[in-house]
Length: 317
Image (spheres, helix red, strand yellow):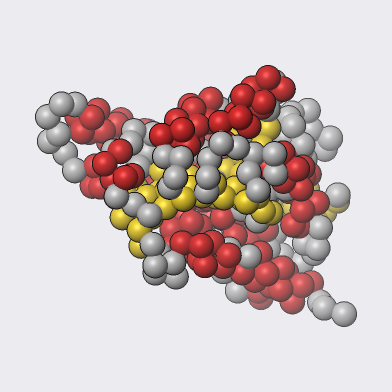
């Protein structure tokens, strides 16, 4: 029987290795990577960093990176359009969904890949309309993060598959000997609670003040983003005077700093109580004791059931 540290390492290795299917799909092609997060949700920044780690480790040729604004001449010159992963496929976050649907309509014969997503529609009418858009595409590959999403994805395309979140490609963040094994009287607990539209009533929480991603972000970080946003607006004007690639690189540097601060903050604690999926996934990558609460539409438990039931350091599930 595997001990806990060996079990943790085996699970983290296995989840990261699942991303090799993307490598086979993207290798030796010119990739346009769109809908990169230009906001301070650290979970989405972790996804982005994991995705970039996969690119770097496997020499994936990214010829274009974009936020919400798109240079269509660069999309036309790519072999594959790649949508960023996350939990925004559906009708909760319409700007992301509208961008994907517009690209799907505009490029019906180009290979388009959506990195692992959780799907949620509040409205059956919205789901049906979106399905009609995606199902008309000739070469759409849809990766999703749980079996419930997979059932929906299979109505959008015949190329629907289950795949763990891209943050798993950040492994290894620690050596297995750094895993937390004890939960004693002096355990440092991080109590992470959502404050956004996916917040939910917690079944159990730590008896202490709560934390969310926005507390990682400094006033300086906010000012830097505002400056970059102004540069993007200049770049979108009739007279382009700023290189959009430079904006992406500057934002990536800031995002990396924020993720680094987040990792250090989590690393300070032995146990994490959270209802954020990436609070959970970052804790798992760091080998922490975890108590997982769900979000408003059961995304967290769906992910746990699909990929994390063998995680050895759950406080309770």
